[in-house]
Amino acid sequence: VQLQASGGGLVQAGGSLRLSCAASVASGRTSSSYVMGWFRQAPGKEREFVASISRSGCGSVYADSVKGRFTVSRENTKNTMYLQMNSLKPEDTAVYYCAADRNNWPTRNKYEYDAWGQGTLVTVSS
Image (cartoon, rainbow, N blue to C red; front, top):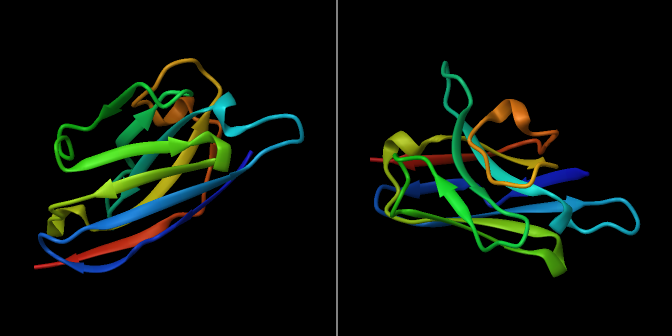
């Protein structure tokens, strides 16, 4: 699977952005074959977990730092995952990456993900 993240940009604190992750999958497969996740990496910091969503889209997990502000969703018919980010804070500034995992359940562990997109930059100004 190949992943392409988009939707990043510059936004003021308190604002909103929606990120998208388009998946290109092999013939005969759909993105529903994969658990999908969002991670982010700020300058000088390690890549950290943001959110993960189950294959069907019925289950999801979030990092405590974004719970209640971010919502992950997916449209398997479009092979696309989304991250709606509301009430953005300057500390949300980072490059956001999407990832795909062949396991059965959403996971926070970045080492379990098999494929990664190229990242999209989100900058939140104070």
